[in-house]
Image 1 (cartoon, helix red, strand yellow):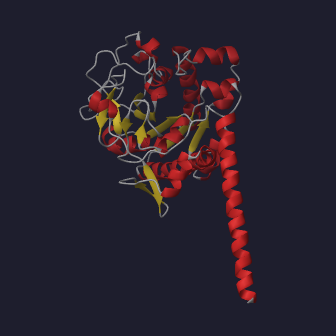
Image 2 (cartoon, one colour; image 1 turned 90 degrees about the vertical axis):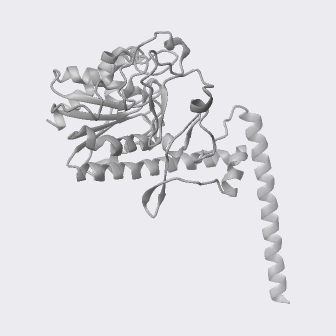
Image 3 (cartoon, rainbow, N blue to C red; image 1 turned 90 degrees about the horizontal axis):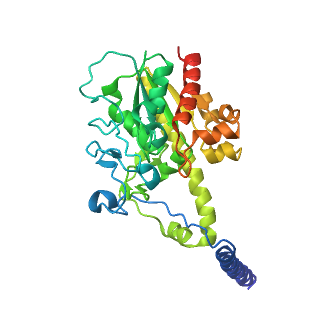
Length: 350
């Protein structure tokens, strides 16, 4: 009898707490919807969840991407004027020098037999140089800083996450043959590692998960029932989003570890450059929680966070660095960035 009463009491406590939890959940859901009506639900994308919208239907206003089965996409080398997502700056009608592999570089990777010294630069649209002439990009400016002594191979592609940068290195490293690798990224590129689909243009991309402490390409994965609940609930999604973003940093750490392993194996020097957006500089927010300083220091890898150096420029010069109503770099901005990277390289690598 005593045991039965004890079990009954436990059941009552459990039911009471369950009802209380559901009540608080409903209350939190109502509160989020009332006080944060603009809250954007986050749901991680999965392989095969969507079809390639851009490549199949041409439903977007852009014409710059070309399908690449290993990397997701590269740049088109058939259109005379590439169009990106900003209609205002598309009116500039710039001609981009794109090689057959789909990168902003003057030579075909497989036909360039030059023995000149090369530095591979991995990155996203900031490195690629959207809305900039060929001689205004970061790589073109660093080339001039070094008095044209070293060739900088720009293999940055708009929209790339750090996972795609890593895959680009593995795909072309043996062909380009460089002793120095520079990975140039903004913090958004960390979050992109979570995704298997780029919403903006509607393009699928490769992505990784961590299994037994190793990077594994995601295939045929679906969200669990628990994930679906967290994706549908406004209240629970707040926690799900924070958890996911923290996971993107863990995933990026593992990608960096793999890149470090491969560059060391190939007897290459690696420099990782973290570049701040205009929002970070104008709001004096370095987002320290996204820094990889400790990890890369422990691995004895060169790591350069540009935030502190750029903050010294002052608000007026910072504003001049970024395109209005867009946030990408101006020709003035790429000169500043190239100058600081040149100084850092000159100090540690030569």
